[in-house]
Length: 101
Image 1: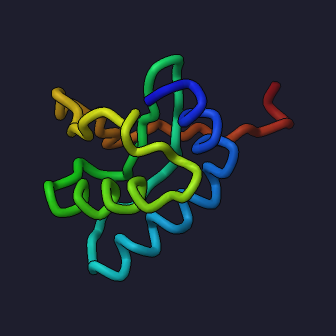
Image 2: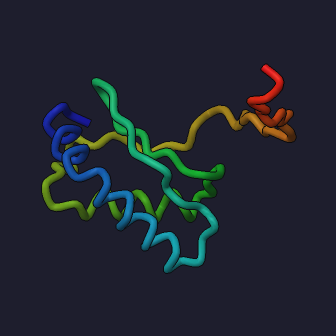
């Protein structure tokens, strides 16, 4: 994406997150967008789970329909190359007792 597209898209990122999530819910997808992140040359739409192609298609269609975005300057949408994730299975909890300092 061009810098102009990125700036326009990020200006209303919370609005876009809500609309994309509504589209995903309408399609009965279990995937939801957590947040949108940008850097110098791209926008990343971060989801709560690894997406499948149909979820990516819904997100792609939403981005294409955003009025302020110049579609000509939007590159190919792609899934992340890595599917590694951290799974937290337990965190020890030690209650704080002020009487035993």
